[in-house]
Image 1 (tube, rainbow, N blue to C red):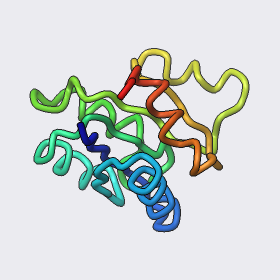
Image 2: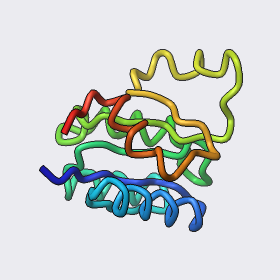
Image 3: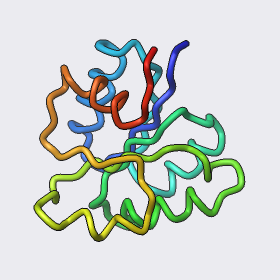
Length: 125
């Protein structure tokens, strides 16, 4: 089974590295969005198996995008993992009420990203 992951990040280089890591190492299909509004449209259209979502983005940040995904009838069950450079001790409290599948700190190891995502989501294949 080929997994489909929506990667949402306003930084072109992070988006490209993430996409390459997931496609080349994991063999997954990747859909990329540069912001929250685009992510909402793509998530609804493509119904990905998961969303990797940057926290700090202009216009619509990650937590706001997450809330919109949860409000959508076709997107509410898609698991979301936050990607963020803003992870420090105690920071997870700000996301505790959001029921995200996990948080991956930036910078991440591109070679280990698929393993980390799979572990957070319980994917075994």
